[in-house]
Length: 253
Image (cartoon, rainbow, N blue to C red; front, top):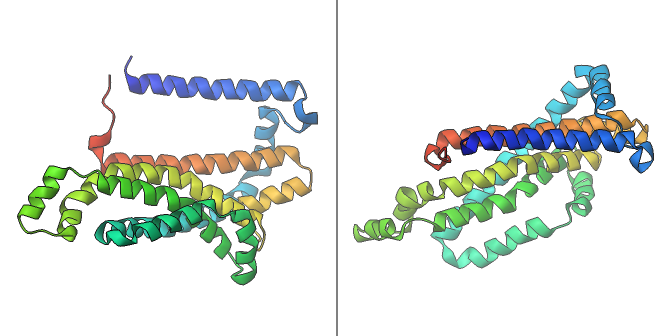
């Protein structure tokens, strides 16, 4: 059996085990009945239908996508700037760490008051992407083959030529790997932005409403919808990564 087939079987087995544990927890009335069975959650999602999930799913996806684009664009631009202007590395690294360590749940309400509308959703989605992508891109840019860099330098090329001809291609695998992690992170940031208030639609808003109404199956259904959206984001970026850098694909064993 090759590695790809083994990975798929392992994934199916993992999902089956997770569903089994979920069903068992519901059957044993763990946590005072706050864990509905998988069947109850699926039935609630079917009953609520696309009228509830469709618009909220779309709004959250739009906010996550905008944050994903902004956050990653800024992260990649700053990573490139670090390579072109090495003295700013300390400042750029501190900025990235600050974005990662800042308690966004505390920062979110301030953004809601200052900007309002859906800006907090996009802002938090971008913040959740920034650190991972910047670190991955810088690491990839520095992983360029020294011999190739020396060759460009021997022909009179400076940092820009080295970046354009060698480093960007060398950084592609690391950057794409970081983007795959950033996609679910953007969904999480968008949902937290909605959860903090200031908007009237989205998975975060629907999740809050379900919690306030003590509608446990719907709460779990919204959480499942959020997980599906995050998984879809990861899958889309993974497909793009395979198309953009096919040489990084793992060989079948």
